[in-house]
Length: 64
Image (cartoon, rainbow, N blue to C red; front, top):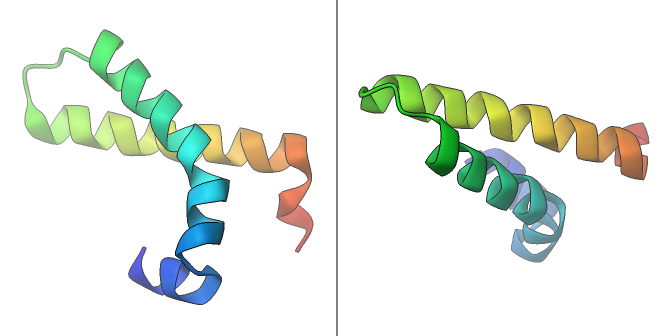
């Protein structure tokens, strides 16, 4: 994560990842009740990754 943010810069990172992060956070807060911090964190990260991938496919930003 540190390398990615350092490479693209904070403003570009926020523009690219804020929508997926925010949506994943809301989904995790509403639906993930595993009673385990590790499981909920893992599910949140997988959700963030998946939403970020979908966003990249839709916006065409994966073609860099």
